[in-house]
Length: 235
Figure 1: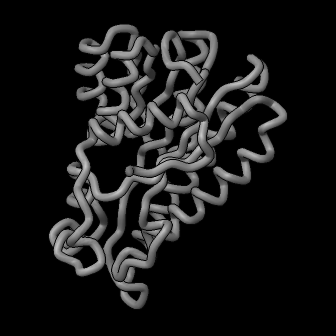
Figure 2: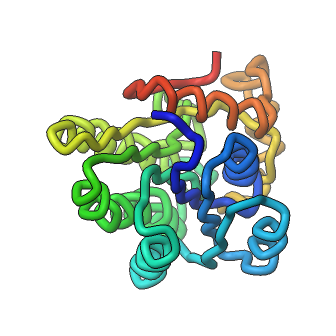
């Protein structure tokens, strides 16, 4: 799919991969809808990115997701691309993982993308097509100690996404999954379990893994939008 003049919702747009992707989309001529909880950050981005529109959104709240989609349609009349990037990690062994914390990341990492997909599909079908790109993780392709709960949410997201790809092909709605690896953002520091960032970086499972910049990841995400591949990851 081409980027120029397309209406693109980006969740988790206030920082990290989401912010880098939103900025790159705007630079390529897209009309970007910025969705995240940090209203002040979004307003600043809206002022800096031509053609953008900010909608403060908590992806754990179903009403916020409905409002996001409604305001996007009211503003632009269509939704061409949805990028689900908002997410949170959790650190801890399966034996000790906090179940309440796990429920919280399931709400954000699984239910949030599912609800937003359900919210945009009718509009995309009505307009004759569209694209949904869900940001998963390379942890869904491996078994890293202390990341089992987080990884399981990304396994679920993969299954929802790739099944929807088959179901929606007849409607010309493309559903894809992108798998970033370790990226230089605050994602680890913002995880449930404060040790995640330092411990994961020193883990034998990951200490030889390169750390990508958010900008490099954003470039790869836009490349996948262009190719419409089912799955993609950093080279």
